[in-house]
Length: 107
Image 1 (spheres, one colour):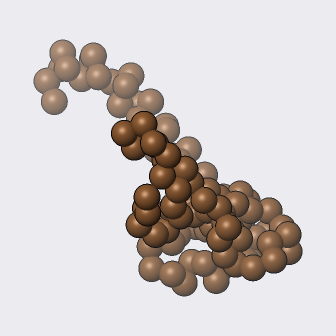
Image 2 (cartoon, one colour):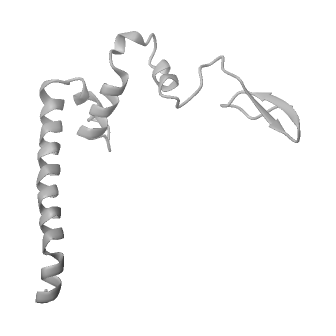
């Protein structure tokens, strides 16, 4: 790296290196938490693509799993799908159309 560029970028590269070390430490902390404090994340991490951060975020967002009667209620809680009795009302061309979000709209 040219000396002039090294002089200009030196402080920025030092900050990047420091932040990289902090991120690695946070990753280790999260991994330790999933192995010791939140062992329920271990089952989630057997799913392809679900790692420590995703599993821990999911568990901490939901809180106590006992408050959900069925597993389907979790998706509703997170806003991923409406409850079975939810109906959306859409307005197309100034007239309301009733229909379930999961099924095609019917006039």
